[in-house]
Length: 299
Image (cartoon, rainbow, N blue to C red; front, side, top):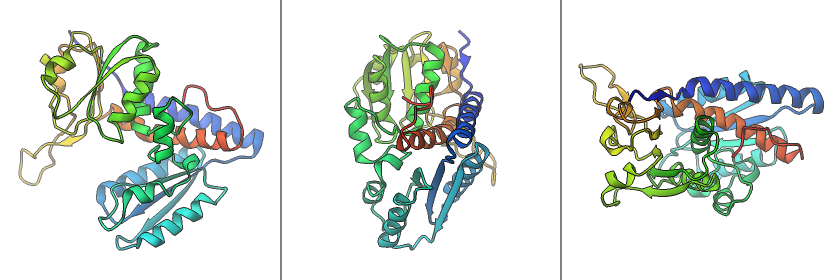
């Protein structure tokens, strides 16, 4: 079997196009311009690249981008004061604090200081609880992107058997909740799962989000399964001074021989994360203004 490649890059472009259309309509019909504020503390190179990309794409879809770059030694009090100002700024509809934070800052405290309605990362404890109880919530961007790709592939997910490998608060747990809401039968597998290969082999849908390079191999998969690979891991370089290859949590070569469809790494789930961040900012803007939510861009 030669698996269909699920092109996350192309799908993310479609999502950004839909967001841009809705943003233009908000401006023309209501005089509203959505605004996204991103807060970066410190100088982590990967985070800097990510924040630049977020800012660029925010502007490209017609939104306002507010970037706040703080010194790594910034105190918790100063960071919380900034978040409080953003919470009370009507021009800001979405707030994202780039993680990880420097060690002296309490991530849980910082995340939960963001107003839930502006929490476009979907990490606030209120949004976590709302999602878990099937209510309207801001949904974490990466799981939302995975859900969009699966809905596009299957149409309806009702009755599908799904295994989520990984139990993080950022991907694994919310992904399981979203699949449950779409009437899948869901199993969460993790490092302590006994006979994990057999568990995975029963699934129509496999979402790998465990952070271990090429852990899931083709012989773990049910023939025809759809595989969503959330992992991004860099292998050791083969040459001195070179960059190691980027791979997912799934061994792509062997999995593609068995799966019905699979996301590549890179170019699969990754581009969907920022696209869904923009979609969430749009959703937050619509909600606070009592307007209809954008169709096809929410969970």
